[in-house]
Image (tube, rainbow, N blue to C red; front, side, top):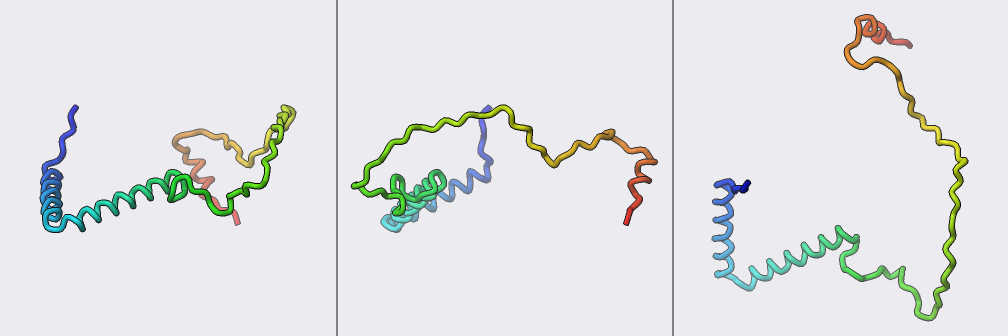
Length: 115
């Protein structure tokens, strides 16, 4: 199944290409500068969305460790899981009843309001 582009979209893309070529011929330095800045902006936004930082490989100033300190390796701690834990009580309850259409009696009972 081949996807075809709608003819109106093709016309818009055609005019966009013509306008881009005309702008490139009229002022090539500014056009290339705008394209480069747009690509740089997209790179930074994409990197920020992936890692949460603008520049890759840079650490924040608070995380730097001094070169004079030695790192001490600790033995990994193992935790034993106890199987005797009681199940946590959840505040949700199942309300039993019939699904589907209600009888006339039930709708009359529900219409009563208690104050």
